Length: 112
Image 1 (cartoon, rainbow, N blue to C red):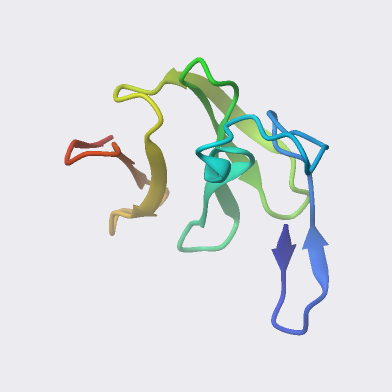
Image 2 (image 1 turned 90 degrees about the vertical axis):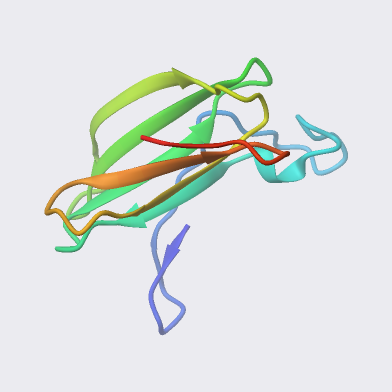
């Protein structure tokens, strides 16, 4: 869900892997893995980068969206290299390029 400072919802969409029932979770021990894990607006605020877990099988969908209509411009499915990792986008200082950090439950981390 994208909300402005006035509390107005600008955009909302179910993530690719979403459980409708509050009683059952996809990952009972890891509720943070249901939904979009990370979203990041680029520096010109024209694109939104998103990461969403697809299943318990360690697959994550990476999306690049156009902000003016929220459409998906490009997407790819990647394997989680550490299993049940957390994905986080961050700036690189280079125009139109974002870094993707992948952090494991332990002390492993990878940056793409």
